[in-house]
Amino acid sequence: MDAWWICSTLSLLLAVIGVALSGDDGWSMNVQSEVRAMEGYPVVLPCTFSHPQHSQHSSLQVLWRLGHGQSATVLYRCTSRLGAPTCDPGPQQDQRYRLEGNPREHDLSLRINSANLQDSGRYYCRVEVQGREHISFEDKMGTRLRVEAPPKILALSVEGSEQSGYRALCRVQGSPLPDVQWLGPDDLLEGVAVGPLAQGSAALYHTVSQLRDVEPGQQYTCSASNPLGKEQATLYVLPPQPPLYMSGASPPLLLLLSVSLGAKVLLLVGMGVWMVQGGALQGVSCWWK
Image (cartoon, rainbow, N blue to C red):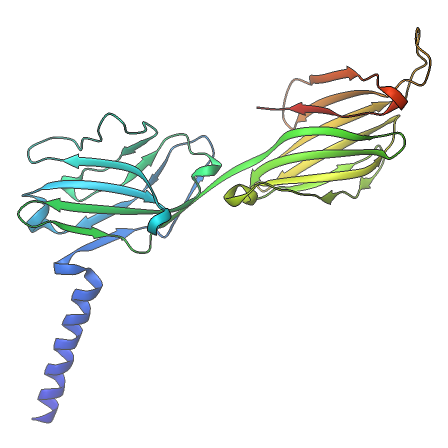
């Protein structure tokens, strides 16, 4: 008798736990814990649910959020009305996002076109059944999207003066965060990371490296690499030349060349002469887009 009572109690307890795990009133939702994407390419965040007795007979609203709580941003919202073949997102919807699945088939998967590094984060899908009873269900764990990109040198610049000395700065982005090295004519040089770096999530894929004691008459190469690739940019600092019509020393002439490994063209991206009092070099920069 006692054994029968214990078995019955355990069966009832397991049934209650099973209902709690599947969701309220039999709801269940399946998502991937993490999805990886390459910058510039589309990515799909899978999300499916089950609750057939309601989803086939009511209007459905689908929502996708980036982040959770009050700081969350609604990225996509659409309504699937009874008898309609598609889920209508409305005229204000950002066209980068679209529903890849069909809510009537319990598929809420979201497609993001041309993913970028700023898209990285945790996404949550939600479905609402609109009818006599308003029922909603949302995935609580979310899907982490990790967008990856090869290194890109955003800027290469030189600052300083003859009195204080010259220093080169190399600003890089990529995910995973690139490793930055400086190369001299004959050997590896030691650079240091400097701030301020980008704020918020952008700091995860931006870095700035500084090389001190840059000397005229030398060339310096900034090399950025991560598992997805490598990019280099070379700075040539030419020694001062005697002026033709002005007295005093002439500041150095700087040439900046961008070299991407595998590229077929050597691109001359910047050339300039700065004439300032005291021979001070205020700065030269080169930007890539």
